[in-house]
Image 1 (tube, helix red, strand yellow):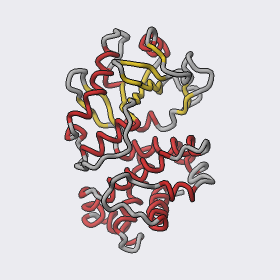
Image 2 (cartoon, rainbow, N blue to C red; image 1 turned 180 degrees about the vertical axis):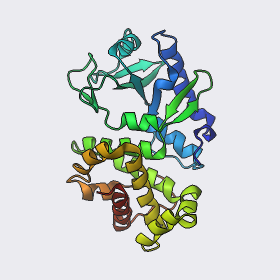
Image 3 (cartoon, rainbow, N blue to C red; image 1 turned 120 degrees about the vertical axis):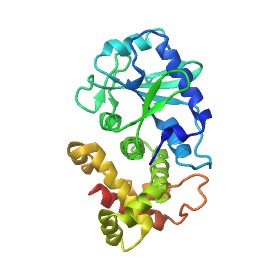
Amino acid sequence: MLDPTRCDPALLELVDRVVAELESRRARLITSDVMLVGAGCRDILHSALGHDFALRATRDIDLGLAIASWTTYDRLTSNLRPIDSTGIRYTIADVPVDLIPFGGIEIPPGTATPASRKEPINVWGFNEAFRAAHSLPLPHAGAIRIPTIAGYTALKLEAWLDRSAFGDYRDASDIATAMYWYLHSSDIADFLYETPAGQLLLQSEELDERAAAARALGQDVISLIGPDRHIELAHRWPSPRADIFYNQMTVVNAPDWPSDPHRRQQLAEAFQRGLNI
């Protein structure tokens, strides 16, 4: 079972500094309402699962903030130095940080519009990922939340749909990395071989264990996001850029990730069967 506290402690240092700085602002921030997303989430999950090969590097921190009103967000961000025109990126503890609001302030559900922005932010799936998230104790700043693998994947599906429309394909690699975790998970192998549901899934994939593991990830995503988000996802996935998705499904430095785009497509299609799309 995934235990995020088993990650390399060095991966917590930047997050700890940022959250401690936010706490010091006395803006009624509750650390358990903070969810680490993006590359920081990916790297901690990767390490906690026992993988030590390097992934695509980044120094940015992305934090989702579950808030009920804009007052808390405005208090947190007042006097912070914005980095660019996104309206959500600030320098905190000398680190570039995206502060992504979600929760009770979403109008309509799945979108949030801070006063610092003219256009809404897409926060599709954040509430569902947050409800299922693990606790992640930090060295000094208390415990925040970190999505499960399925929760991380759900957020990356939406990110792919959004960003690939503008020629940014990086999220395909992150989705492939989540598949890699399932393909190499002893828990998923036990599920496939030791449970009736897993055996049925394995048989339905013609005893292709890796395809079955990819399909299991899709099923776990659907279980996490629920029927309403599933309907919304089904209307958009896999998008007109499916072929690009298969080609971009690389896992940097992975020793045994398939280099053949056809095999990657097979895994993606098994994953899609798990999504029931």
